[in-house]
Length: 396
Ligand SMILES: Cc1ncc(COP(=O)(O)O)c(C=O)c1O
Image (cartoon, rainbow, N blue to C red):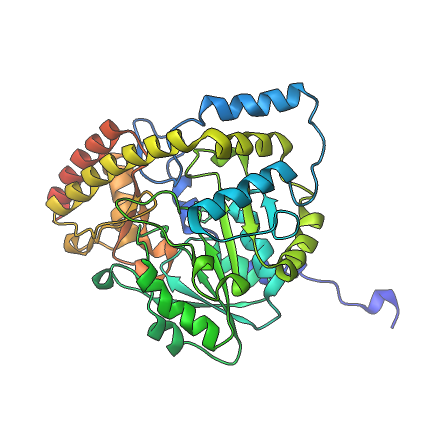
């Protein structure tokens, strides 16, 4: 066959089928609607309204002034890995060797991609609670895996249960991807909730990717690190980050911890896609770990005040909202309005200029709910609730 005989590809065929198969984020589509609107109150984006504490920023500036403008080790600054290792040991009693069991990443976003690429072969299945963070499914699919959503419900506080996971097991099941405290529901799992899942993982030789980015944002509730459960450290990829608890979303810094063989596989991907996490951000993160505890506590206390305001507010309006015990999201049911979650969110934005995200953006089990992020100023939440009350009275 000569070159002229080779049929040329159509325009769509020039793109990867795998990428085309991933739907665009339901959140992004929604944010396009806000562009250019004035007077909008956003409970949409999941990020702290607080600016990064000054001391962390100053540490980054100091590092730049001192000439630390180069790549760090692919693993990240050793000092930061050491501090992180000590931090996790102190909080959860779980030990990771800073030399070969920790990578500093560009946020949990990158760490998720590393984890799925490191462990999945084509066709391997990953079980995950539905609803869940929007990036989980794409990270599994981009790595060639198959995403298997497992239903959770409001009646059960959106907790995932071992029998429901077990019912979806097949010979292809490779891992469980857990994200608790949960985005979008705010659900948090106790140690007793997690133990049967640990038992299942051990019995069926499954890996567990534990996205614990909201570990510090819990209310009257002690977070349990999945890797700290008996026998779980060897089969867990623990992901965490600075974005939420330390108000550092824009710095793009997080971490992945795993047994050395798994971490080495993740490192192979990381070294080619990123080389190393941004150097000034790593210095800011080091300062956050060294001296940021008071700031974390103060922000958590303020989120808790807002959490009570918003949950009471929704329940008073008849938008039933179970009590979120972690992260900074409320996930009320809007079924009593007779609207779909898409219509509710779109009309609320157009008519009252309040942004919430339709629950179905996070999976089928999110339908009939909306996600409202309460990492927004208290007064704005009060005003948003007044606008929502007006809207709900009108549509009912
Ligand atoms: C559950 C969850 N995991 C990961 C991320 C990504 O965080 P990062 O900023 O560390 O990439 C988010 C951000 O919203 C999240 O909610």
